[in-house]
Amino acid sequence: MTEKRLIIGMSGASGLIYGIRLLELLRTVDDVESHLVMSNAAKMNATIETDYDVAGIEALADVVHNNKNIAANISSGSYRTIGMIVAPCSMKTLGSIVNSISDNLLVRAADVVLKERRPLVLMARESPLHTGHTRLMYEASQMGAIIAPPTPAFYNRPKTVDDIVNHSVGRVLDFFDIDPGVVKRWEGTNPGLSDS
Image 1 (tube, helix red, strand yellow):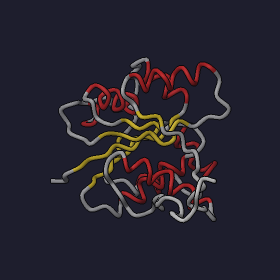
Image 2: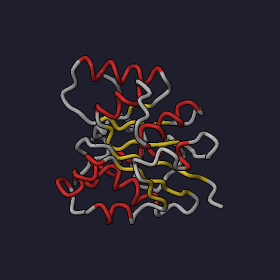
Image 3: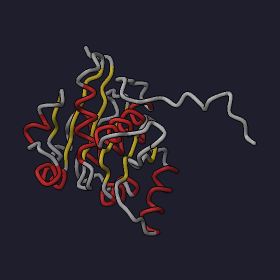
């Protein structure tokens, strides 16, 4: 039996590569079983934004769930997981999670993760943000979700888009104590430098 199960949800915002890269990285981690659930809009974005088709993305996951299957194992708190990442997280999905509108498996799984007090990481993807978006992020945070927009870091001197994507998803995996070795960690500044 696999020790850890991690749910990856993909919704219909731009940035599907973040969810794809998470699945790719999790394939390199022996003791984690990935469970994938995609919205219809995410499936549409696959061919718009990436060179993957839906079947290719699903092939990266250990277990694939139909978003319409509200009775899937991940819809129950008794099914043990280490949590869930929604990457990318659309504002529609964020709003549904905040308001507990569990009319599909992606939102139901997120709702279960919250009620079981497991980590739920939302890679919210929209820019610019209006007040309604930021209110939803605040409310999700108040409920226990971790809001982690895929904002690039530059201290690691990224040279490619892949560097940026890898760093963002690597930092998200840190919340689950999973380190596939893609994050260039901050080591501090040169101790010989002064503040003056």
